[in-house]
Amino acid sequence: MRVVCISAECEPWAKTGGLGDVVDALTRAVGARGPGGQEVEAGIPHTVQSQVWVGTGAVMGVGDIAYADHVERPVDLFLPKYRGLEAPAGATSRSLTVPDPLAESGVTEVTIVEFEARGYRVRLVDHPPAFDRPGYYGDENGDYPDNGWRFGLLCRAALEALLVDGRPVDVLHLHDWQAMPAVVLRDCAYDAYPLIARAAVMATIHNLAYQGWLTRDQAAGLAFPEELKRVMKPHADGILLLREGIDRAELVNTVSPGYAQEALTPAFGMGLDPALAGLGHRFGGILNGLDMTVWDPATDADLPANYSRSDMAGKAVCRRALLTELGFDPNGDGPVLSMIGRLDPQKGFDLLAGAAPELVAAGARIVVLGSGDPKRIAGMREIATQHPESVAIVEAFDRALARRIYAGADLYLMPSRFEPCGQGQMISLRYGTPAVVRRTGGLADTIVDVREWPGEGTGFLFDTSSPKALATVCRRAMEYYRRGGEEWTALQDRGMAIDWSWEAGPAEQYAASYRRAVSLRRDS
Ligand code: GLC
Image (cartoon, rainbow, N blue to C red; front, side, top):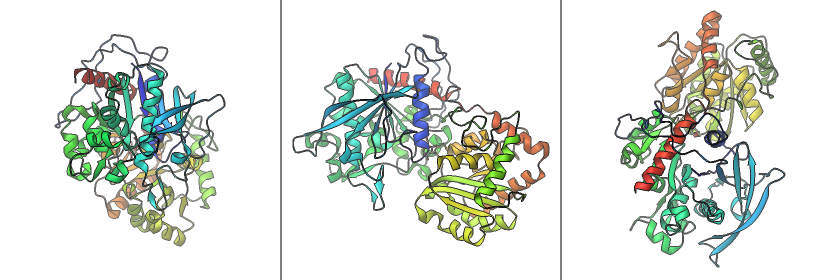
């Protein structure tokens, strides 16, 4: 089974958030299951229990599907060659003529830069007018108005490169709206090309908040007028790329079972809940994994000291070093609360700003690392100015500092309003830092409240999206930390013991879903 992924982000080449990490780890993990990879035996029926296809609310495994077909290696991943993205030595380049509705001649030359790395084959689409820009999606004026053309070009270039390969594609795995032009094009521009037309599409939604709206004019960058007529509904004033993906893909999933259930409700569906509900059992949730080798306090080269479940001494070293680095008193015993993320309303930085005065008065030290919309952090900045000895705000995208915070903090906060999966809570647990999270989406699927489940808990949950509720749960967590002793170390240890790895579950669930998508396509 030949699987081809298309994404706007992939670590370590392009990342603004969890999407980049997940696409990298997922692509590697599904490829590692193929011949020459791990574990899979041909033809053995396998029951998948933890995958949930929600549909009308029923829960359905896909266990009756026999594993007749392996994912072929290497899996291909198409990604834009953004500004600053350097291909490694040994990469090959070839030029490719791609249909382009905005070009006078109807075609544009792009370069496909290819290399194998991290267990899959990266195929960068290099076209400077589209991708050599300051931002991936936009700049200080907002989204680039020609994103339909830019990501349409990414997808067209991918499909054209696949035609040149001359080998049939079984599954196109599309991540988020930027990749959805590929399924639109499959259906309206490449339906006469069996190599592409036969491909089943698996569309993964990492966040329903980003849907890729194109006005009628902007949609002209996506497809030629004739093609557009086939896509655009009469009287519609534009195209919603994510919606096109939902309507056309064989299977649609989001990145946790909990968020998949929520997505079917008006409160979380962001207007797409009816479309998702209409898919029935073709919509579901697969919980993201975590690359346990990329995130490992025992080997993390960015930490001042390494540690593991059997020897936790290094965590105290990391804590002292972090406090010193932030200008806090390294000898103070105030619990260190941390939060890392995109500065976006989703993440709830404003809730922390509202809770911070009470928490600081109760002796907390708070560190926030974030990049994105500076307005989101204005409240916190004010508090940091008043309390430089106990509140630090770092407005940056700093991979190494993020690691030092996961390791050096006592508690990790994710007060998200909604959270498709979330990665910080898994990383923090792996680094021995219990998480304080709102009971929503992937957070509710991954963190067990220690008050509700004393012998199994890995963190602290709260329900109401308010500063008060956040302050209350944080104070509970701080008390727990202050009591210390066996109870605290057991809480840390349970979190560190969890195997979040892709290989332990999600990779297999994706592989099974690919097979299901292929059979749905065959039957269509
Ligand atoms: C998006 C979601 C986040 C998820 C990530 C990777 O960034 O907001 O919850 O963990 O995608 O799937």
